[in-house]
Length: 147
Image (cartoon, rainbow, N blue to C red):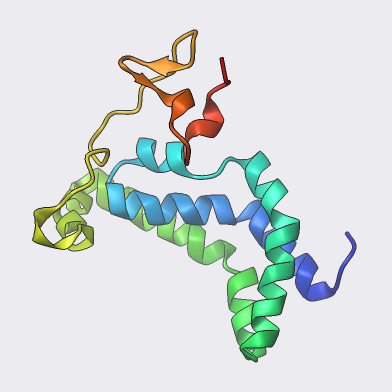
């Protein structure tokens, strides 16, 4: 790897731990491991993101003059992410995740129409039932090949 030690630390973080961190966050908001996994970046995307995000992370550290412990906390967070996934999995298994979900929802009862939508595999032409996912820009589209 080229770059400074700090960049290499962040590159490793984004390649190995960013995807599971996004899954953990999405799982809390959706209460669905399937949706969280579907919308999280896949390992190839994380690898593509890593060099760019690591350079940016070092610049942000320098810009805000963040203390060294912040760098250490972020780049050595593997155990925290793993523990978080275990705890959220346990909460999901015992049904507590559904009970705390309202605390993560948008106020005034406005809920995203996709929040409870089941994840369906794509068909031969890249569509899921009546929704053509190849025409929807954004997260999750990386799992479908264009027509």
